[in-house]
Image (cartoon, rainbow, N blue to C red; front, side, top):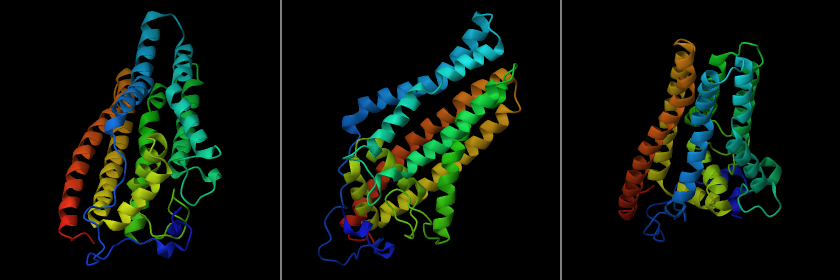
Length: 297
């Protein structure tokens, strides 16, 4: 384990001297690629879209128009069926982090810490569960409330990103451990922790990826700036789509609101992902050009 993760927070360096003769010809590698994982990613996100968009809409309209079940019974069935894939992935994720000999655990932390993204998921799950319970209990279910889980999830994640980045801009030091960043260290862009945790645990990058990402962040000014901007891009985009979805859900016709709540956040996420892929590809090329000229600071 790298020593700087277990020593004083001030040892978390953010720059490398560009005049250093030992500066390599390329940025520190991340040693990770999505190319060999495309099929796995496709299968996972297909299941997620089926689980969190197609299934709740199809079950709702199919049972409403094809059976004589009461609205309460229909939404009880929809709620019970919702999130199966995500729940399995949540507990698998927990086990990967918790088990003895975990190969994806956070650097410098006890295994009980899990990681920052897991606690974010837990908070989002609590909020979504409350919405589903209170929406389903009445004899006439609160359909608009039952259309809010995706918007609520987006709001939780984007608000965390925004709070972390505002605190970073104000030069506030981390009040708690955030994944591999110890308490008291200078904050990093919120998207950094999402990338670290998701790739290390869900993407199979392991603890080695956490260390590689840290080295890349410390060494490359271009990489740091790209993550700063991506954090703002995702945080503000998430806030806007969460607010827009909420407004539509509580103002338009009820059945249309249900469809909007279960589709708009996914459409936004897909669009933002495509833009991010192109953005990162361009950023990495620019990083390499500057690094080759030894202008990365």
